[in-house]
Length: 323
Image 1: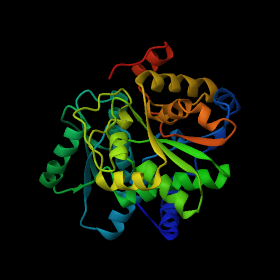
Image 2 (image 1 turned 30 degrees about the vertical axis):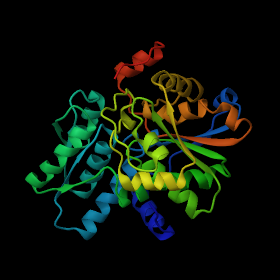
Image 3 (image 1 turned 90 degrees about the vertical axis):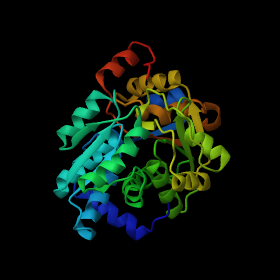
């Protein structure tokens, strides 16, 4: 989803009112493990522990300035999008109601409430929560916020600008893909800067809808997205996102649940930075392409660190959590 340099600068100004750039670091132990120079963009260091807060801040800022009739938001999430809107809504003085599926990550639920959201539990998965949220917004007279929107994309694109400005030339960047604002922001900034960097999406093999859509060149849905990597548990991609990924990504990789868990252990061991499952998924994709990147300069997006204790306990014990 294309945006201009002026739009990116304006989004950056909004984000900067709330927090400084997050770190991008080339970790030597991680590089030794992969056989390349590996930069990690640490979006676990934002005020909500994940990259999505950038988009929420930009979305809420525009709503407050251009849609004064809006008194609040309703949206659906598995966690980080909801924390983003809760944080941004509180800053803008707006009510935020978040719908989550049954059995959702309890730590993320608590964080959303802590940031000021009203929590509604409905549905067996994200897609059912999303469908319910649309009707609830109409019922409450609030604005329904989608998971993919130009303001969300240009907001999260600010992390890509920070990465490219500080890390220097990169051959490939690996990024986890849920509802796709992150990868689309990366593609947009890469193109604005005129770089030749490959952008590679990574999904779980148990939530392959985006990879299937990329291969088909059109939206492909799946009946389930049954993965412990909750940040990428998408079974119905957004058409605009699929089109942008098809245009600008080099490929979309699928990785196993075991590979996702192993990537979490590797991230912890080599950087001592806690990843949530999706936060290490880009690294799992990189690990699957060691031969492809040998000796190159690459980056992975550590998209968030909101990992609940039960998952972390299993992963550190050498197990792969069940969804």
